[in-house]
Length: 307
Ligand code: NAP
Image (cartoon, rainbow, N blue to C red; front, top):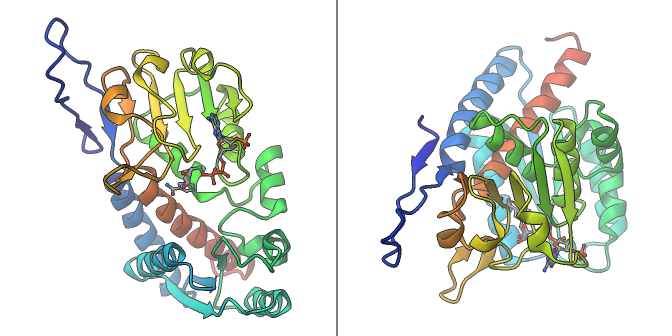
């Protein structure tokens, strides 16, 4: 299968038993495939005179945020979506930002609105998120989107956990009756991840900083999603042989290179499937933003009788 690339371990200590070969779920490959679909759907909408549009709003000069927003806008353009990047100084007031969001809510060329987080400390991020029309909440952070996910109604799913679900789908993994352990309970990753796994009939355990004996939990898991933001939270001794391991974490190692929460070299010898960092969940997050934006534009087209 093109999505799966065998990972051969370079472990010179293991001579008595051959190392287990975990299969890699390649987020770059999967993203490429999904973006072909996005491009086709965007072209179909454009043919009806309905170009899907995303507005990305950045306040302040956070370096990492600048890279993220540029990548999001670039990904839109590559897939035939209209995208505008609005950049404002860190001195922008909360009132000014709320007013901008309102303008975008009423802009017919914009179907998705993304306000890049974090916002400067003087702006209440939750208030800004709640000001975005739920119909344009392609980040899936609005309380209406969270509620829709919880009760199983249509809405926008947060892009990172949505991408993780696509990765599981890509290997044909049936979650029914499986035990999934999610490490982390943030509103943007851990909690929505747990709800998505639950919706697919997994039995879900959510772990966090107050969890006692994380290893006891993870050793029971058929699927582990690590979304903590700390290196080596998950090591080989904490993983059941053959388990699927999804690494959401983004950290820097001692050499300053990007790495995840999972001890990749060790866990690869035990897991059945594993996502790498970089090249795993990261590219999927942007791809799911495109998917949500297309979805928003299609819903609007349908409402206007264009579909
Ligand atoms: P967050 O808001 O800081 O949440 C981290 C979670 O980890 C919290 O629920 C925390 O528990 C839990 N935690 C902390 N230490 C722990 C420990 N030792 N054992 C078990 N749980 C522990 O972070 P986030 O926004 O969810 O992001 C998590 C990671 O994913 C970060 O590295 C972030 O950069 C990355 N990320 C990647 C992408 C992507 O596209 N690849 C997207 C989003 C986030 P408490 O709730 O008890 O504090």
